[in-house]
Length: 367
Image (cartoon, rainbow, N blue to C red; front, side, top):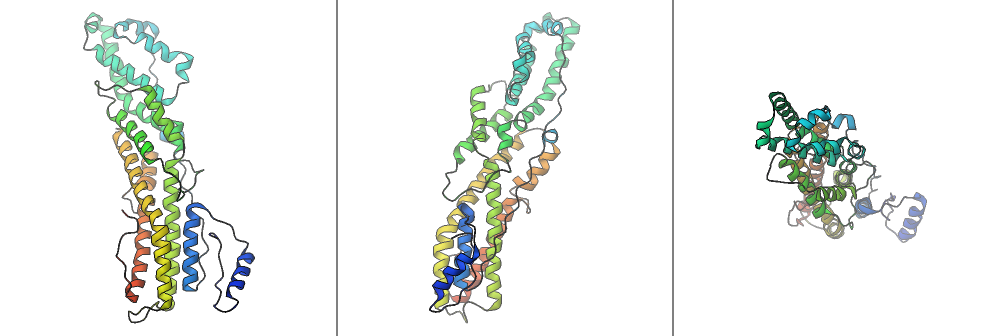
């Protein structure tokens, strides 16, 4: 019955009858997935402590991804007449520029625009190492120089735009998403492989010995489009943090009224509470938290490595990255989740220390 707020029912012969009536009277909403796991934990704990479980508050959604005009660089279009391009025909750019200027070239995906810019830059750069450059007159040689310099300066911004203008990348941060469910298979290996490939193409764009594969690039981008993985992880961290804070408050409020144990001696109520702690927190909640901690750390590390590979960045994306994707900023979801988890474990340790039932201390995240 996860998701229901049950009034506390005193012990007695009619306990379970009254408990059933209380359930019907609440008209409660069923909670499934990760939220169901956490709320069920709160309810079991509240029943064991004979206090009302907290009313679960809906966590805030993640922030909207920066709008397109704030996350992309303006790249001036290089205007060259076909006559000028023809003068550089021995550099092998004539058909390339013509393909870019046709209708299909103009509506190509952002990743394909970047591949075009990359191929154009490489042909211009390679032209300087051929005999073709010696056959250019002074004006055409200057034209080649200016075009090469322009494309060299633009390429890092083009690769940035290829990522941040792609629907696949933007969809990964969709606010229309949910937290990861406990039994949901997470495509971590494939998703990290996709991000790592994007990192490699960014790092090697100026490496003449490396050549990108269009089909492979598009396949990895498609992997990112299959589900809003970044958003799901961020919302999972925020949900876990919210429920841990609520549950810690429940436990600490009960301890403030009276201790669970006296003078380090356990009692039947403490034994029942310990059984719930082992079965529910250690047996059910902790495995989810451990998986979430590991998955989110690996994913955020991969994303930050990709962003670090870019030579340029837009201010709006820098701000979003620090607020939501940082592993080190105290106010970012990953750190907030671990802080809430540490405080929750500390509260339990206070209980078991006072009862002489202290289990092996371990960070419940498994990290």
